[in-house]
Length: 581
Ligand code: DGT
Ligand code: CA
Ligand code: CA
Ligand code: ZN
Image 1 (cartoon, rainbow, N blue to C red):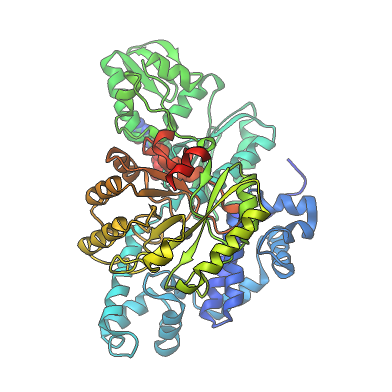
Image 2 (image 1 turned 120 degrees about the horizontal axis):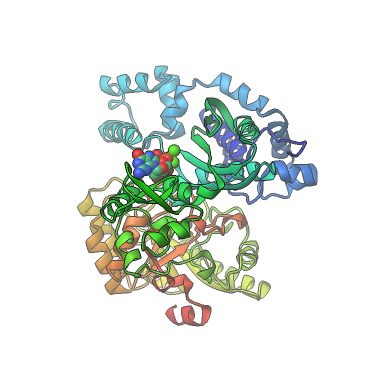
């Protein structure tokens, strides 16, 4: 164990900062400060290295080198790393009733409305709000009305539906940080993350980790005292369970080295996959458990056939190796037996990015820096797609500024010669299906992403017509994050996927599998359905800063959707992709 153990992870720091931003928004602090905290939170959450490590190595200077982190935030990060909490945050918390933060998360509320019901009606929690909504008092107030009341009621309902599962990117980073800590200790031979995280499922119920060790007691000691842990539920020799500060639960199981493969296979799941494989095994007079594959039945167990590696397990079951992402009992078991599994797309297959933002709209880094970062990430082309949008953004591309925008991109092309830079935009699909920019303006762009960013609650019929109309626009190249969901925060919009996929295939419009950790959209099932409808898909980053070129989780969804590199547009090398512009 290293002597220095930071008391906060990147996730803790990001959490504290977004908490501060929320509290400030309720206290009417200036917008600049709020944005500074929420930007920093997003960047820190996605940072490739733990800030505790950065600080230990490079000190405060190292922290300040991270984009969005100035002197003041660096001090706050230091305080979190050394104490595990933040005085400033505690002060703010004292000023705002706790229940208001829950209200703030309701779709349709937002800071202005939340502050209003707090100050005017003394609403302090969800119960108070529900009572107020039922009283009819709000509907009578200017700027509220029946419509916003019913929107808020719907928002409350949705919040219940989204439930407690945690977005994969968050859970993945915590699980792997725990894995790293266990590995660094030198107490374990093998440590692997299993369960839904290994399968890259978009949301995660709990973390499952497996280890082999000769010192189980010491390993469990270490596990239950990691800085991520809030509470220890169970502490045993072969299994411990803890509640983490992030709200997740984590299980650590110690298994025998010669049974590691069988255990990894079993605890990776999914349960449906396991059940189906086990049933087949029984019919073929074999028994599969977390301890291995045995000949014979459970009651009359024969010889051990395989246990040490997953490969061995699949082999004795007569199956090709099935990638974890496919293990959902969606046809992979049969395909593995018939040697018909697809060769799944990998991160290294991606040659370019088709969706990224700069400071022209709501990105935090300049076009030049974004282009360089994309190049450093190993890409050979990138489309800059700043927003052209009605909502929320002061900046962005307007009808009359398209010319300036193109000039800016030309300048960056000269400045960063090592990567092909393409002039694009992410244009709002308005309520009617029209786009925010005119056809004349769009015709100057080489790549147009069209996205839904407003009116998410249209009926399925209206939403389908809206998206179909955007697909019919000859300037549109791709539909961005097609269902507009936000993981754990906003449900997908409703549209007729069959009709939309068919139209996209016919029009040659690509659909995005957004790798943004906030979205992962299309999801696995829809991506597979789109592929089967003949649609071309693109795994794009939607990066808003230089740290945003992380395709892992988008590729994860694509793999879960059975996609190969031949299904993914930005797996084309530049020479091929260029022809498509
Ligand atoms: P989660 O945590 O809800 O995101 O999903 P998983 O898949 O990680 O599920 P979890 O944590 O309950 O269990 C981890 C794996 O252990 C699961 O994918 C398969 C295996 N497993 C758990 N319970 C059972 C069971 O009752 N039967 C079988 N066959 N396998 C199970
Ligand atoms: Ca799990
Ligand atoms: Ca579990
Ligand atoms: Zn975007």
